[in-house]
Structure formats: structure tokens, C-alpha cells
Amino acid sequence: MSADTRDGLRGTSSPPLPLRVTRFAGFPTLLYKELLRFWKVSFQTVAAPILTALLYLLIFGHVLEDRVTVYGQLSYTAFLVPGLVMMSMLQNAFANSSSSLIQSKVTGNIVFVLLPPISHLEFFAAYVVAAMIRGLVVGAGVLAVTWPFTHVGVVHPVWAVAFALAGTAVLGSMGVIAGIWAEKFDQLAGFQNFVIVPLTFLAGVFYSVRSLPGFWQTVSHLNPFFYMIDGFRYGFYGVSDVDPATSLAIATAFLFAVAAVTLVLLKSGFRLRH
Image (cartoon, rainbow, N blue to C red; front, side, top):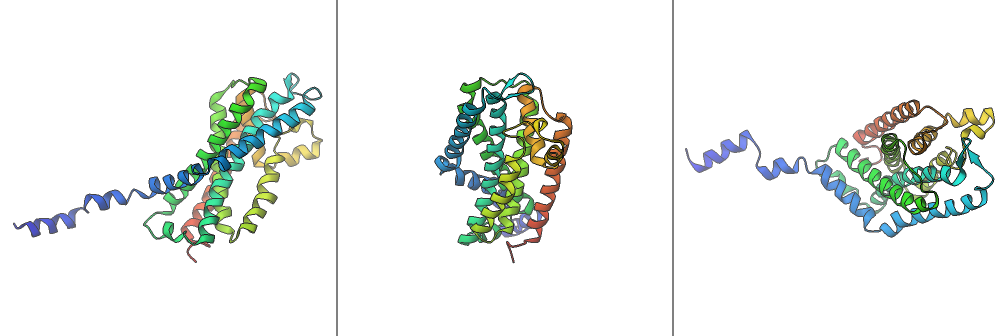
């Protein structure tokens, strides 16, 4: 058998190694690109939101520390820290995936992501995982700079980690949806200012839902972000407005719903390929 024949037979049985490798290189390559994108400007994407959260703590903590006690014995500053950490994680996870997609669409370089043989699952996973990592990095930074003010402890670390992962995954997915839907920066800014910011600010970051009148407690319980923040706070202090298992179930269900919508949009190529 000649060398050409042997090569031909090999070609029919299995592709060359470089081709086999590149078929599975889409996710790690795109993930690396997304991580590098926000880390190269970490002063803006990481340091700035940490400073913003610290200012919230200094202002609200200074004004209300001696006037508000939560759950009977918890100081207001201690109550505030987990909420600020979670709020920062949620908002930055959303910002990472949404800003990346809208920048790629506006500049036209989205074509370089769509042309390679990257499946919609790899596309989704890369953008969402990168968003989760940015959210978690910012959250860790906020916790580090606010910890000296309260020396907060983590009573149930597994619950805290579970809600952190679920929350950042939800917002990373919502960021992909917003990035797909928006065709210009103004539309994305409107989505963030009129949907994401109100949902996070009205989710019990700065107050306990128990302190609200009955009607507004009901409204708060319709906000899925409330369960993420309330459950995350439970991981720190072991107290919450809602049973953490219920909160995690709602957050997980919301994650599956948002992820399903995102995957459908990516598979259809809505506003990406058309």
C-alpha cells in the first residue's frame, strides 16, 4: 500500500489532529477573549464599581447606622454589606455580556465571532461564564473593601456561593439578551436604566422587605432579584425574609427560563445573522 493510499484512508477514518482540536476550541477561545476584554480595562470594569459600592456604604452607613436595626439585632452597616456585594455582582455580570455584544455589533467585528464553527451553546457559555467571572471578581473586591467596616462573617458559605453563581448566571444571560436585542448604545442604556437598575435597587439591598407595607411586600416578592439578594444575605447571617431553599428554587427557575430564551435567540440568529 502506497503512502498516498494510507493517507487517504486515514483521511476517511478520522480528521487530522489540528482539525479535531479546533472543533472544540470555540468555547475556551471565546471565553479567553471575553475575559481579556474586561481585564484589560480593569480600572474601569472592576475598580470603578468597587469604589461606587464603598461610597454607598460610607454614605448610607454613616447616615443610618444609629437609626436602623434590622432583624432585631443586626446593625444597618452589617445588613448593607451583603446587599451591596450582590448588587455589584449582578450589575457587572449584566454589563459584561451586554456591552461586549453591543460593541461587537456596532463596530462590525461580531462577524469574526459568527463565522467560525462555534455553536450557539459555546457562544452562550463563553459570554455567560465571562460575565459570571467579572461579577464574582467585583463582588470579592467589594467584600474586601467593606469588610473592615463590619468584620462580616459567613455563617453559611455554601448558600452564599450558590446564590452568587445563580445570580451572576441570570444577569449574564440577561446581558446576552439585551446585547442581542439592542442595535445601538442608547437602547442598551435604556434596558439597563429602566429594567436592571430598578430591579436591583428595589430588591432589598438597602432595606428589609419586612419593613414595607403589605402591598409593597407583595410587589417585592414579584421581583426575582429580591430572592437572589435575600438568599445571599442569608449565607452571611443565617437570617432572611424568605426561606433560602425557596429563594434558590425561584432563582434557579428564573435562570433556566432566561437561559432558554437566550439559547433560542442565539440559535435563530436574531439580530445577529440577519
